[in-house]
Length: 83
Image (cartoon, rainbow, N blue to C red; front, side, top):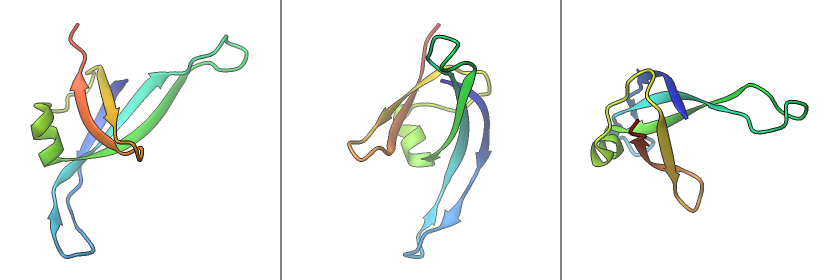
């Protein structure tokens, strides 16, 4: 996946606790034979500052990254792919 953008997105949770983090915007090639799929998919994910720090990752436009997910499908970690 490629980072095409990011934006600070802090908010107050339902419990009144302040949540600090970033929304990251990512693209990835669609897989297919050109007839069934072609181009790029896109998605945005939210990563708390705490999760980003645990991963040792600071978002940069143009980075190629891989995501790790929990069993419930939430993003748990992000790591840059070293070229």
